[in-house]
Image: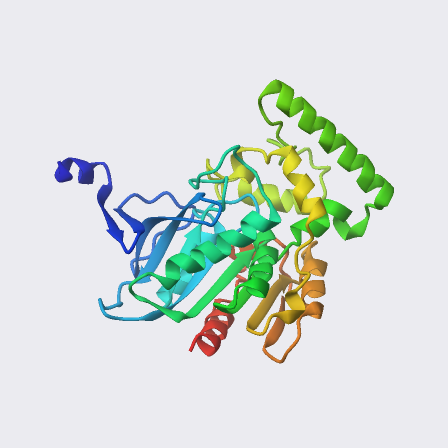
Length: 343
């Protein structure tokens, strides 16, 4: 029976300390597979009872008794672990860390219904659930755990670091504050009256959703570009809708967010207690990113001499998803940041 299972690319499922680990030889990522790491599909629950699914990357040089520093990684907002977060996880595992790239609640292979829902409380909890998992994994030093969030999950990562003192180092890459942009629009262009009209429309949609028994999706990226779109939309499209980053389970590639998810994002601002973060934080943003102000403003709120802002010359928002043509992701800096602070 096991031989038959192996033929389909799935090996033995093991329960280790309440953690489900499923070994697999199937490769479904948008980036090339490294021959320096092992990868396993894992499942764990958050405090809302949602089963999160992730890919656990470990260095092939790791011995059975080793206790290594670990990093939980998620994002961008609307992406899956087979995209940018997986690339970061694989690369950092090559550099000696145990890494976990995971799908947030209600998205990708993780559970939760209705599908394609986001929320500041839930998505902050997702990071802490990943820390739960890593803290109990046999080869992880539980005192040496960090997190890394990309795009919208950069904001949620900083928010998690404000509440979860087990997190010893946090990196926010090309970050969005999803609560701020949902409530105020880009560059805070939405005023109180416009926000009230938006809330009216969203609550009317709730009534319709209940009546229809299904949830309307918000508009996403167009299937084709006209050429008249803002540059940042063209940048997103160039990643999510092309061979570069398309993945069938990614909301931004092939789906729509639940429209009324915006209500909780509007009403529950994150980063309120980020000034109280005592652990190390590295904020990385592109010089030419339309979202740069999110990272700079988040950094201004942080206190202490273990916080750093790094602006990548010439990089736009999406360049930091996979490096872009110029390979601008500062992995050497990220590696040294974690090695300095997870010790």
